Length: 173
Image (cartoon, rainbow, N blue to C red):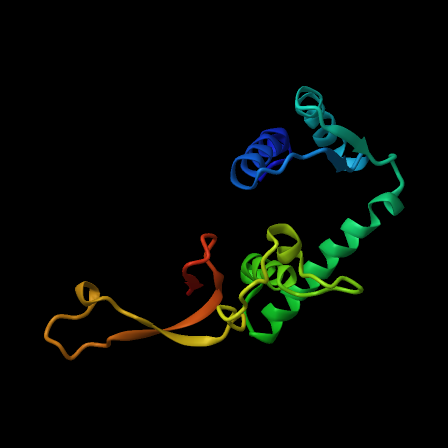
């Protein structure tokens, strides 16, 4: 959420990778210049204590960080295009961006033969759960929340914002 929390977030990520998937982070590549210089420096002690190599990019050389910058712009543009196509307000860009990342992770890119999720987990991703961002739908109203008397609506109109973080439900408004 804030740059000051990057070192703690890195520690949590490393623990998650090790505990859940048995993976050890060997190298951290970070932006060594501009507004993220302190973030890279703040991760140094964690890298040193856990045997990780730290490779900061050279200051004022965006070419070294080009691949990440292009991916960030690609995701931003995907999300913004989905938001605009769905005729949703700019306040929904966060959800459109999360949905764009979900799509990116289950799509093959360039000369790769596997999706990013497949490279990570070793399993082909299931895309049957994907729904068009901003699409209209009807969500069931549980019996306890329905109007008493039996003649009230059993569903309400919603707009799809993506999947929840656990992957077992959808976000709607």
